Length: 111
Image (cartoon, rainbow, N blue to C red):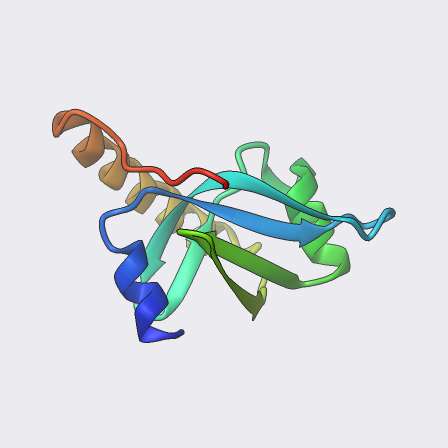
């Protein structure tokens, strides 16, 4: 992962991701919560594997990350084993509790 992206992600809780529609192939961006672990951006779909962006990534595992009007493109890897997913959920809860106790959540907006 580019060091410039890593620096932009520090202190944020939300980013915008772009995926290509599995039928339309149209690129769509939406905000998602994320965790930064080492050189990985971990995303948790709110509705699990039924979430549209997750289903889009299953069909075409290429994702765009947009931060401060800059885009990066990555190949996505889907995690489905329960232990990994539970670990990410636990870490996300801890981070969200920290954000709540400090009075807010940092976020970015689409241009």
